[in-house]
Amino acid sequence: MEPDHSAGPPHRRRKRYQGTHPRRFEEKYKELNAERFPDEVAKAQARGSTPAGAHLPVMLDEVMQALEPLSGATVLDCTLGWGGHAARISYAVGPAGSVIGIDLDGEELVRTEKRLRRRGAAVVVRRGNYAGAAKVLRELKIYDVDALLADIGVSSMQLDRPERGMSFKTDGPLDMRMDRSRGETACEWLARADEAEIAAALSRFGDEPDAAAIAAALAGLAAKGRSPRTTRELAAAVGVAKKLGAGRFLKKDAFSSHPAARTFQALRIVVNSEHEALAQLLRDLPWLLRSGGRAVLLTFHSGEEALVGGALGAQTTAGLWRAPLVEPRRPSPEEVRLNPRSRSARLWRVVRV
Ligand SMILES: C[S@@+](CC[C@H](N)C(=O)[O-])C[C@H]1O[C@@H](n2cnc3c(N)ncnc32)[C@H](O)[C@@H]1O
Image (cartoon, rainbow, N blue to C red):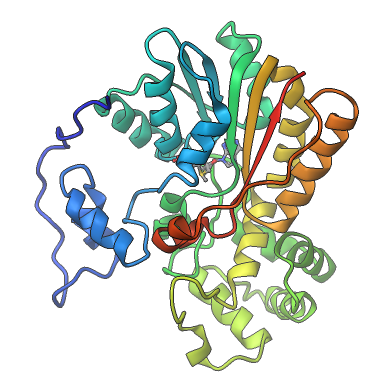
């Protein structure tokens, strides 16, 4: 049985907002205190949105089924995020097992660690890049695991917090780093990359059909020292490059995609070297699992699917995983209705020979 979740954080006076409903992220104090206001979370989900400050674990039941059997197991969660998957895994492994959770994002990791403790979930939390998962495990004197999960990409908290600068939905500095303690921001990258580099990134990581026009517009702005510095400025520059009127920027519903969505995705992947990290994790994957161990990966777009499908296919042919490599599973229509962000998820599973 899952532990009691009722003990929430201490009461704080809510932010004042105009009108009858909070609109800005920081005003949604009930959703931000999900454990004290579970009804607000249910209401947000019924509207097809993710409650502010939370992340709904994608394909949770399918992930648990794919990771099984778990009682007494040692499990590595390479992308701890909000801890939704890790909490469920921790209850399943029980006191005889152990769960290690890694994440690059030190800011969210602090909140997640506290939340997991409140929920009675035993997870050993480490800040780090999953490209270095083997090193993290070695430091804990663990040399292989029974099961491993990698839920690739970005969390809803990162997308929704304006200060992270990852989304066109809210205005914020054009940052996009998952680890804000190091590296170049998206704003800095755009100011120094040339037109060809920007165009290549937009096509490769965003499948953006207007990559050339957007790259020309962004390089032109950079040449005049007017590179976008905020998410709103970037979204506007994309709109101009695509020759769209302002009205086209209004998303019709949670399922329709914003004209700047592909540009934002591509820049986030570049800034965080996401494909390099994933390629390294895939190279190490067979050596992180013991015989019979299960690796489960969730991908969210075609670039990730190509990387994961290609690597797992080659490793299966090489006899490292049980053959054949099965086509990835998709979320149920019911899950997509409740959590539109799950719509592009693909669940890959391999078992170590
Ligand atoms: C989709 S979320 C994971 C959500 C999580 N499964 C849950 O249930 O809450 C992806 C997470 O991976 C992290 N991440 C992205 N790239 C990473 C990397 N190279 N190494 C470690 N963590 C990474 C992000 O910071 C983010 O928190």
